[in-house]
Image (tube, rainbow, N blue to C red):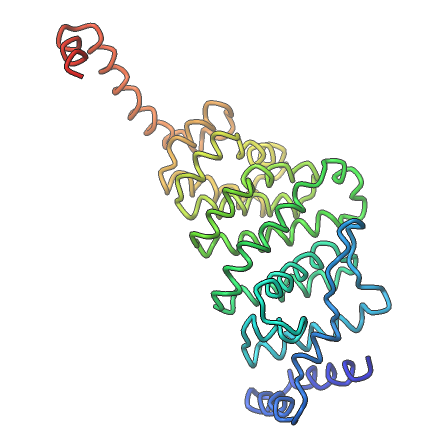
Length: 330
């Protein structure tokens, strides 16, 4: 603990130095023979897998300060000296196998979702986002297959959690998880799209409005907005099939001030629908909700204009000899 506290102080001091001075200080830790700062810090964090049957992490209150300092050191180190997923796994689990990589990422996500320490929860969230920004394709692809599934499983907790979430701990965890998902969606990667569809996240995210939490509601709206921004048609079909955007309309209809932040995000979501010509989705929403017609009616009319004339033509063909001949030829 004393060593971590000492190194943490040095890293804090380094933030006040100029870039070259900061790099020189951090580089000194890399030049100590037989000493690996990365391994030392990761072992200090002790990211053991949370006990699933208890649904809690193994970070005790006594170790929260140690873990928090270690994470701060790790972030400062990685910002100056990028490392690979193999480097991180070697430091924490002493193995470079695929299982170790999956275990490392899953443990990070599980701790972010389940730790009771808010500061550590936020630090892990920042750390995961940093890893996804690293450009390491191995980290990104592993996260699509491992991290997204853990977050999706966490979302599927029973609705009773929304009633018991008195301190907003669960809401905060789900909000952070949503933020990570929105970030992955914005990358518009094929593996991410397949994960979103296979994990049924389009359906599960809509249920999060039951928590009646403003921060979580913002995350829900951003999630669907990010999906629409990809212009991926299977997302649209799924939203129509499952009435997924009903929750967004519900949030909007209950807003007292529709010009606040969440109202602005919903306006932007409606703009995505019209701008990307999701006409069928617009028509679907307009047929159910009067409140969305000022935003989506023009787009919905495009869908109606495309479908109605075709139906009329088919009807006329059914009542003409020419139509009968066409039918026989077919």
